[in-house]
Length: 285
Ligand SMILES: NC(=O)c1ccc[n+]([C@@H]2O[C@H](COP(=O)([O-])OP(=O)(O)OC[C@H]3O[C@@H](n4cnc5c(N)ncnc54)[C@H](OP(=O)(O)O)[C@@H]3O)[C@@H](O)[C@H]2O)c1
Image (cartoon, rainbow, N blue to C red; front, side):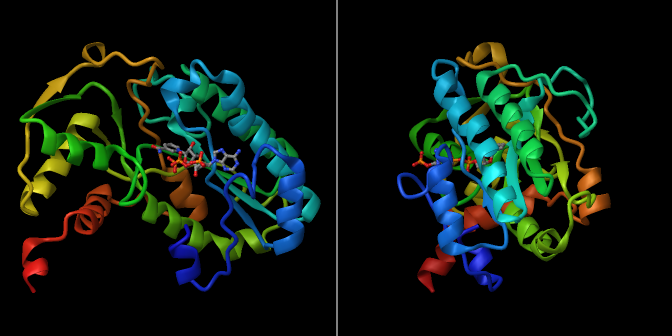
């Protein structure tokens, strides 16, 4: 967002605690009054999925109360808001890709807190767009691509879960989607079909193991030695929080109503690997 929005000509205020705290109405009001934005995009969240099981109060403060306060603050300021949510609002037992009409049933504290946040935000500001995404990666911050590259350097063999389905989503694709929506959202009145809950991930669907395979193929093409990859099950890799086994999201509604197609994550991965592992020829040149 911090790269794509200015590149598209938008002036942004990108805040983090302690200056801008999602859990403080006073902090939100002060930021809105000082900067007077046309729209707010909220990418802040408590995202430590396993730790959330033991820090439910904090997870709910940031992921539920926070978006509620943001909804109230943006409604008071008379502006729309874009908010990111997650496939973890579903338990993954449906057996087909989830549509926005499918009832959520989170299996983790993180998922429950994000679902509560969606609801509080939408109740507070009718001009709210909630984008549920999944498996977010980029060249920045910590994520699965960077973890795989690190483990690939450290180990000769790696087991990756092959029985959880979903779709990687690259942050630059999500940012581009938001950029393309801004003019419409800023002009749209409450009740416009562009507000509400939408699913937006990359495509096509895969498993963590399939994603890891693509990462190591790309890394090998860029000169990094790849480990032997073993397919393991969720039971082989126990985690504190339960993950959905099949959290594929059906993104057709985003295409139909928002005009945004799910981006091919393989192209996003290539861009990400180009940034993280510059090709040897490029170095030589
Ligand atoms: N990553 C994924 O795979 C994934 C999947 C589905 C949905 N999502 C959603 O996508 C969004 C972005 O996720 P991400 O992975 O980019 O998260 P991230 O890397 O953990 O970034 C979250 C940011 O929120 C900030 N933050 C935490 N508490 C805050 C508060 N009280 N006020 C203001 N900022 C606060 C964090 O700051 P500190 O670092 O200082 O704590 C951090 O910069 C979230 O809504 C997440 O639920 C992510």
